[in-house]
Image (cartoon, rainbow, N blue to C red; front, side):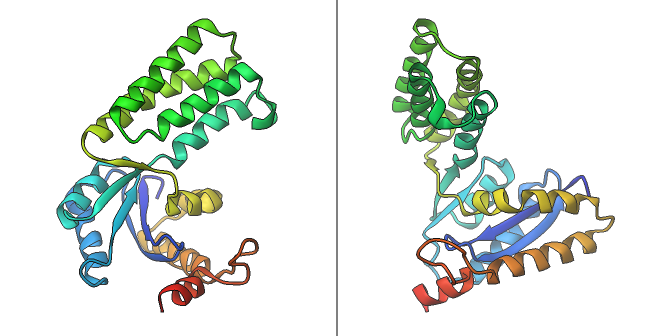
Length: 227
């Protein structure tokens, strides 16, 4: 099971609709039945946008099954990775020195760029800061990471994709990643499938403990909002 992936589909309200246990690097064709099944569960036009990571199989399957739906790429994990480089050296983001904070903010703006032109403008500013400012090792690591994601994100922007930071699945898995990682020890597909089913069913029914939806589960919130 260490060489398996779990693909999960959820709504913005964090209701997990379905999941699929696949090979580590599935093909477009392998994911298409999963997306077709999701499409058949919704009336025409109800799915307004799809957010995913940069997985090529997902992108290809979405393009074929949902050609008319806007497809956004997730940058939630990119922002998290930038912050992580500062956390490794500093105790919190609030403790970042002024010069480093400028760099941190510019990198975050680069990640959120909606056009290739704005992304180029931000990376040029970041490179100038790298040359002209006295920066911490954390900033140098963050700038190296920014160079990597700049090329990747620009390629997606040129293809018409838009960055999205409110990625439900990234948020869900940031809470359950340790549990899911343990699931890699399962010896059979059925064992992993049953584990994921129970985990995601529990997640759908577990009530929020904070915020305006405190006391409501994702399912309850979705029913309250949409009937």
